[in-house]
Picture 1 (spheres, helix red, strand yellow):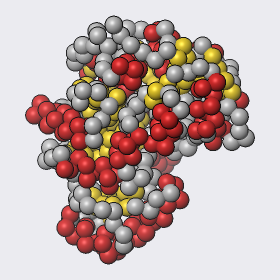
Picture 2: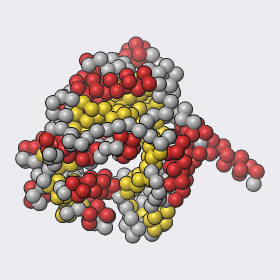
Picture 3: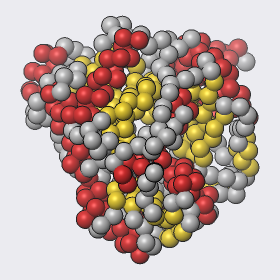
Length: 461
């Protein structure tokens, strides 16, 4: 018999809170939503069994208020907390405090979050398990001289990264020692300001790379289940825009090695619950290296659900409650799925464009799924990430999924709000994307092409 938490508090907001509530409600799990007053009108608030307002003048800080959230959970009779993604999802301190309060944490252990949340420590752990990494698995670099010495061993160009970083913050490419010294100091300083840690490391920069990740589920008996890969190479400023599963034109032997490495990485830290192991794949050589492991549900999890016939939130709840998957869990890889991130942002420069939503009509049809956090009459405020919805298209083949994604993007009507939908349509119609042979430089190349077309049009006018 399947086992789930009796009552679940969702320590999040918007689209992912709504997504978790949907599954929990279906399973008969009582749901507790938390919200700041600026989010009072969002759909997830009314869809939960109970909704309790978070106090605080600064909206973001309210969702980061660990003490207040745990107090609400206990007051509301919640037996478990699901953190979603972002906010406190990868906060080891919060995970410990949840368990210390006698509540079930829906995620991996705090110790695992600690290790995988530090890129230097995570590289060391997975390298010991035989997972390929770029550069040295040793300690963080302390000086520019150490960075130059390591770069000479790895080979230029190199990427400078913050050990505690995320979302591309502080990342910089250096082609020689002078560039590296400047980038090293800048990244060190930015990392300290952004993450409270100045630990920095470097790795070889891959000129033409794909960002490929493997979805895993870790069970209490040590079993690691891998649920295929997702290609997340379509990015702007190191932030994902479009994901697809399976990754197009991926050699079967490469796929097998990626899965094997992901399982080894997760096993190296005794991983439990849902997680994602991310890799950087060199398109020229076929070699890949470990990037990081995200110790939470991913934004792009729906395309794995579509291609494997599973509900990952359901499995998270089952593992949290019983240590294993549901009795009917039987994932089978089939077909192809594409996810489009609809954001309230300028479609040319990608700057956030918050504002009220006057009209909202989601696309429908065979193979179409929309996970959204908003509706007509609600407002996208400037306090949070610009993601407002995810449009997913599934088909028997990549061509089917792409055709459905294009139509769904065109059919999504959002009135009164500027979104990135026009740029997503540009990507979907781009020859490099449609044939599936693209890398992480795709968005930049499309932007450059559009700029050149605009210049030509201006000259001709």
